[in-house]
Amino acid sequence: MELSNSKKEYIKAIYSISEKEEVKVTSIANELGISKPSVISALQELRDKNLVIYNHGYIKLTDLGLRYANNINRKNDILNKFFTDILKVDEKRAMIDAFNMKNNVSCQTITKLEKYLIEKEGIKLKKYESYCVCDTEKSCGDCHKN
View 1: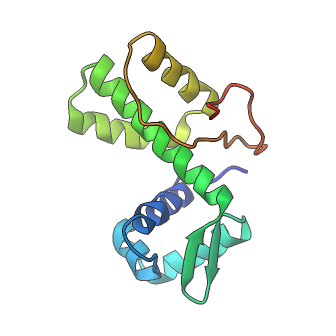
View 2: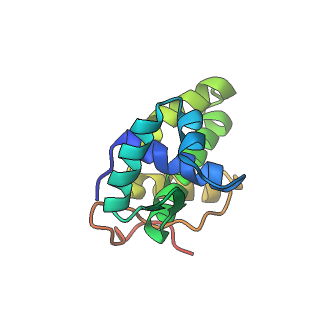
């Protein structure tokens, strides 16, 4: 299942908010700087794709939604680490570039970059419960496994 970049940002926001507090339409709207009706529309779409539970104000990521959130955060962290530690890109620029690139890099490519950072450069990375989130929702055969 392919998601638009904006839907991925909703998932990331829900994940981020849920680590601090109960997720509400208002908190998502504030996090993303958008209107509540836009959030409600997006939540309905994400619910239809089985990525969130959205019922009478209750909002929570499903297991599949959590897989997407972990994958998004993993990609962002690996790209950011590569830019700052290997390429010596300024931290602010690295954050911006990682943010812009994370939604466009495949599971296979990010896994190879992760392996390179760990094995060739000896860089320690945050361990994610990460799963491949390829279009087929099956493992692409080259993704990080726990």
